[in-house]
Image 1 (cartoon, rainbow, N blue to C red):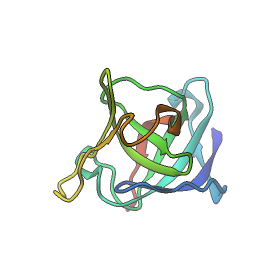
Image 2 (image 1 turned 90 degrees about the horizontal axis):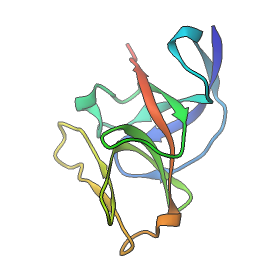
Image 3 (image 1 turned 90 degrees about the vertical axis):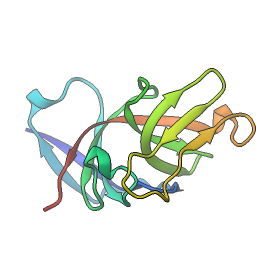
Image 4 (image 1 turned 120 degrees about the horizontal axis):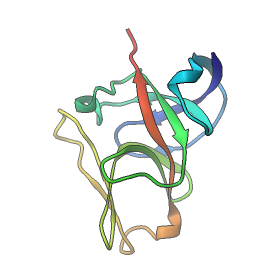
Length: 133
């Protein structure tokens, strides 16, 4: 088993201020992960519930600065606001797409008009969700 830190809370909804404080640890079987750095985040919100990521679940994240189209990722916006969304890339924009039964959640479209590319950073790819019972 490998001890993975729980770094705090990630908003599955509108971006919130990102704080990284180790609040505990979870254990993962070494055969279930590959090389790299991993961390857990606790999900708050319902913007990813169609992907079976619910409020209170924990997501295991592999630290990486890029993902493929359609991957679920942790994205830092403006250097301090983090969100959990599906990521899609176009020539001119990065689209952070919710996957929710709640119609209030809308895509976040980041381009030079509303966020400089240097202000957006992919922090990692979600590997799996640990369901809260």
